[in-house]
Image (cartoon, rainbow, N blue to C red; front, side):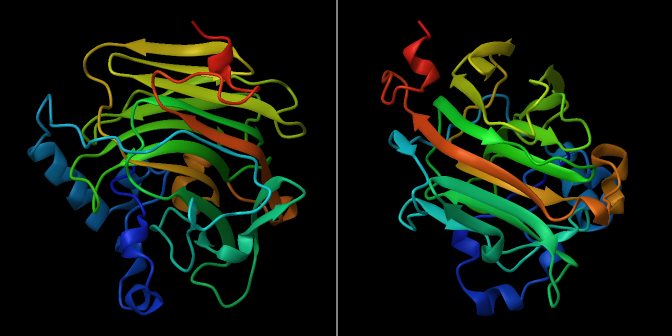
Length: 298
């Protein structure tokens, strides 16, 4: 994941009038930007420099978890559970405008699309949904998904805590870079400090078929799984501990992140990622639905 400084939160985005009065390039930055903002310059670099000069305490008080377990089959998109990002961009790294029109559910599948669209802040539209609330903490996060294929694209599943809702930036990621559909980038942030990227192998047909992706977040351990197989595990005391939001996104990068995402080509658009289901299970609960990895973990 790239240099993300802040994230998009519903508390700051519900009013279209408020959105129009804000410089969108200084809105909370998108889910897949963490290291990228180092190349963006301007306010993003100043913001990150302030973080470096004033590091977060080693053991900050955790933003409390409050979310309940859920299983989402995407028979529709319930506004009580999901918020659709709409009408803004998260920075110069992003070649697309978040748009409600890029999010669709049909026959029990969520479809997130990147495509060309006129009269937008950017030449493309892209898709992001956020689970309502900022209380997603320790537990098991799962999706069954077909990723988007193509250079310049990023399909992502992640948690994020940080401004403006919470003071401390913690994060855990699955990021599928469309230029290399054989591998997935796994990462986490603690107190806005990243640099924990790791690549794991994917099934050869990840952009053609649905596969299961999960991570289990515990106080001293994070484990990532692909189709039930453990692909990465980290342990220690310096791990994310603040509850936040849960996101699913598909977006396109601008030329500022070509070295990471690769250049975007018109020939590969429109591009779509599909999600069969998504779920969150709080610690101590297990096997709330048959497909859950918690049914097989000890």
